[in-house]
Figure (cartoon, rainbow, N blue to C red):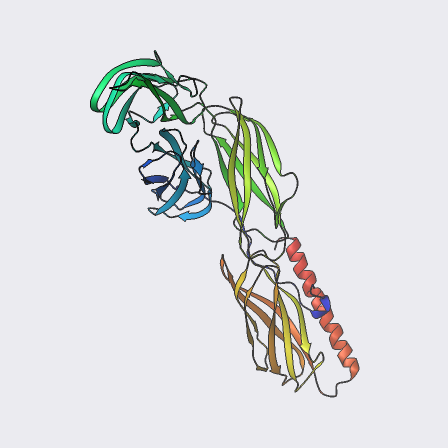
Length: 495
């Protein structure tokens, strides 16, 4: 129900004019340490990985999601979403539970943490999967190699007792399952080892030029005979390795959003998409997956032909926040970017966080009795409505009436789209057109607000002729109409 002109009252208008604000953050989230339990996991059994995240930057990091990327493992802990904020020099622990594969080896896994700024932390964690008495890879000389690099991969084999291996033969990646290539023979005859604690051998390796940046399990096939048997034994272990430094695009999204989103009004979302990688990205589709009270005005996806390395593109969307009940002032709009890099389709997920604002309005005013006469005990009821999209808290209404009675009503909180009555009880001790002010005080995420609206109350003298009543009502209606007209003109001109 909206105010009527004859009540001589208008809508309360928020005096805040939210401007566009760019959030400039400089967090530096890293994995400070990790702990595996157990340190060596049996094939097909469960284990846990606890990582300590540390923000070494000088600004708060708003973490969007964190996951354990572990090919071959069954990750039992779902991806962490909306983790929250990590202030400068603060730490936080995350635990992932997993089930290991049934093939033994050292597996390359990664903890991947995404921030709402679009940056991502990727931390490699090798997980050893071996039985208690089997041959296993104790360590390797490196776990990361870049495209164009040549490194010597030294593998150290160990067991839970002395090694007895005759005619040990090793072969690296016989099925060409990874982009890591031996520079020279992939198969080596290492020799005999009887009663030794560990065995070492090396391969010079490089990475193929068309490699995709990722973590890989490089197969290592072992063949040998035991000290008292001529039968050949065979085992396939896994060497965990991360390929980095690939010439590929890397899209960074800078979001320009309103400081607060108004209810029932269209507002812009501006995105600056930069390619900070070493190659072009093509066929980029930017998509907003809005739902609930947030909707897109116009298309929800924009296509960009290409973004070369070092270039940027700007795109804009228009959104609308509907009026309605909401239990939160924060709204998250998922953003996805799909693009092609070196004939490989890629998908990147982001999130846009919007903050609603409360907006109070006087929806109706009534009195009991309807026609007030001097000397009456009267009730004034003001219907206060929250037409915004965030909760208004600690709402207090005041009416500075020149009468004896209560002039203040505590309404508590008013949800978005809801209303509450402010009731004032008093005794009229004078007649006439009595001007007064309605003041609403409340709080929201942007602080405290104090809004005032002029009003008028007509009190008749006892025995006043009906014609005076009609004249007074006409005068009040005319004054209310002029007040609404002036307010609407000011609103239309942005005042």
